[in-house]
Length: 81
Image (cartoon, rainbow, N blue to C red; front, side, top):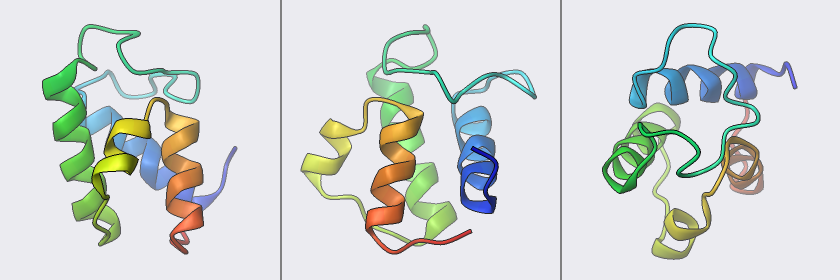
């Protein structure tokens, strides 16, 4: 998963969740780590919206349970690298 979009999203996850550079976010799921709690989730949502110029609806916010789901969501919204 080395597309420009995935790379940008990876950076957003690392920054928003305050993870170490190079952290493996591709396999990360909501609540897998302490940093991705409900507050971290909302920070991540806001960061994704800012980075990609999108607005996630409530269902998307609730459904965003992993890096892969977030990536697929962005692709389905027509976002490219």
